[in-house]
Amino acid sequence: MRCVKTVQYEFALNQEIVGKVWPSRGLRQGDPLSPYLFVLCSQGLSSMFTENMRQGNIHGVKIAPRCPSISHLFFADDSLIFCRATEDECTQVAGLLKKYGKASRQLINYDKSAPTFSPNTQSRIVDKFKEVFTVPVVQGHEVYLGLPTFTMLRKKIQFGNLKERILKKIVGWSGKTFTDGGKEVLIKTVLQAILTYVMSCFRIPKSICEEIESACANFWWGMDGV
Image 1 (cartoon, rainbow, N blue to C red):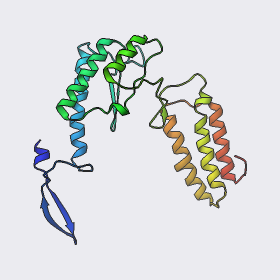
Image 2 (tube, rainbow, N blue to C red):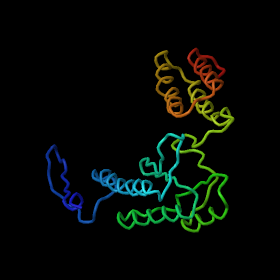
Image 3 (cartoon, rainbow, N blue to C red):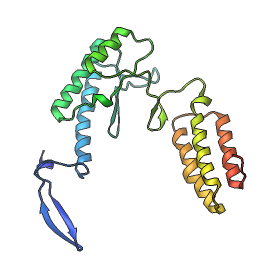
Image 4 (tube, rainbow, N blue to C red):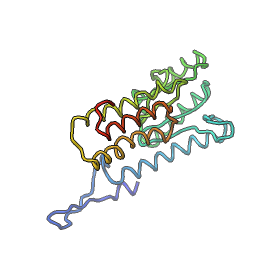
């Protein structure tokens, strides 16, 4: 709390540092201290989940039999929590979130929260979860941070929008005149950046890669068809 109570601000006016202001109503959004305080609070929430998983109160998810269990993932201001679909673990997670909210004064926004269950989960467990958290249940989170949260058997259909994004960019550029250097910059910094982000997590079907490569080649050589 000393970081919050002892902070002061100075301002640059006509190339001179003037004024010392002590905020009396707490921190505001954009304050330089906010990210550090957020990390400290998030570390407390992470420690609670880690300790309860060590004690066997919560069981995370494994992507492979020999991999460690994962009970939570934090991305910026988003949190993903994994547990077994049982009444005991549901109640345990609710208790941890309530305890964290009471300690940090960071309340859970249930209007922006939504759980998803395995198809094998019993309906009574789903109803119990909805009763405890009062949140809507969704079949699956299709996209997160621009990437799909699960892969389908027919990956060509799932990643078809990737090709559409590339073609949309190229169509927008087709009516303009670019030098060879300008085209190279657009291909490397825009088109390949889109692909690199997705391909860092998923294997794109070879047919889609070939179609995208053909579209980029047509754009490079100035052909109308993409």
